[in-house]
Image 1 (spheres, one colour):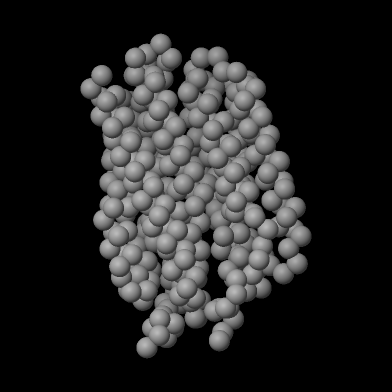
Image 2 (spheres, rainbow over the protein chains, first blue to last red; image 1 turned 60 degrees about the vertical axis):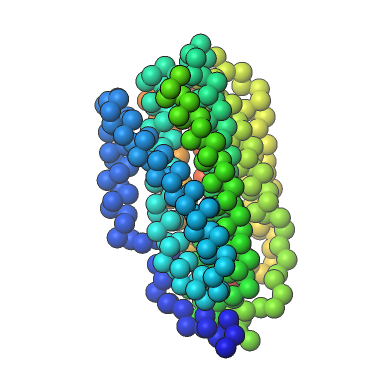
Length: 194
Length: 135
């Protein structure tokens, strides 16, 4: 049996964006706006720590645990996993990113870390550079590949070779973001203990 | 063989690559400004980078419009949802800039950067999907 034959019957109703999760995202974002508007340190810190912790953990897990496992799986198995995993990532990752960035910037401002005279400032700038690189890799390479794979999977006869190529790109970039996230961990723990 | 499994991929202009360079340029400009806030920020470098991104976005739109056969329906379907999603993210960032008291030239520059960011990603995501779809 060829790979093409195995993947010949995809779910036609594959949801690119799981609609059920959108109200949760809306609640999270409204909460973020309220946290910033009320300028409460606990709420801002909560958004930054929860968002950042989950973003880092998921990136590390994908890059160093799930990625290598996925690389050794057969193409049909990869496709099955992709169909279930990727739509969730499409909603989860941008939400975590905006929670982390918005919460983090407000936290740095609240604590005075953003002032160039502050002893934490150089570490904050270093974190901004790494987060910038993370955003470029995630939004510019990883996410378009993710969306393209999902659309390919909705076709009556998905192209296994194309999916394999796009998934390879996804796995490499997940590894890069994993390394960058390790850098973020070093910086954040350094800032907390300065 | 079906239409969905072509043996040879179609060749397109480097739209994804150009979008990526525009994104990098914008992020460098954004990080530069954010690293200097709330103090004085020299606008020269970020302005050059944002204008460069805008020019790349326009170049991409011209290149896209010249593609003779393209899955425009898929392109616009993905681009409009990307526009909405990234628009919400950009809106959040704009809200933070305004909330933090960013005003004047810095706010104009950051707003322009966010608008280009949303449009650039809409083009990138739309193209990333449409290039593999049949008309």
